[in-house]
Image (cartoon, helix red, strand yellow):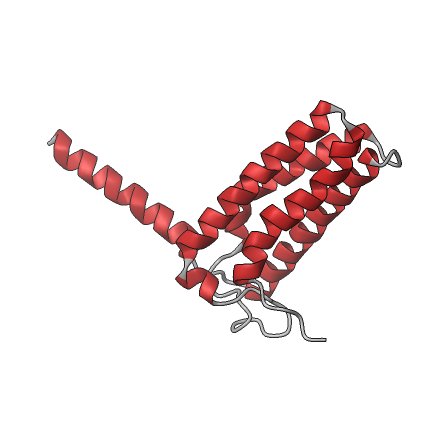
Length: 157
């Protein structure tokens, strides 16, 4: 009986995890707007960190920005419900539909970005202004862009 209950519990957890990243959203346009607003906020966080490193910003804003990036990276997959790609919301979404077909790669890329975010916070806490000023570029180039290169379509010019 215990073995059967354990198997059912594992099956339920796996089903929930699989459905989590593959769930369809009721309002794709709203999901895209939320995703884009979150990405813009994280861009502002990176600017606040860079400004602090260059001596033009505030330490508390830099720390809060780094912490926000970490927290957001940990829940980023929630911002990509199925049905919010460029095929479903053309002209608004730039998420390549292959993202959902290669969900494991997306999660792996996001995990790398999480690690970069943790390093970013460590750098901000370290106090070396030169390193702090350079850290946002490392996060962007070697964290954010890893996923963007694979799964973000270019905006038309």
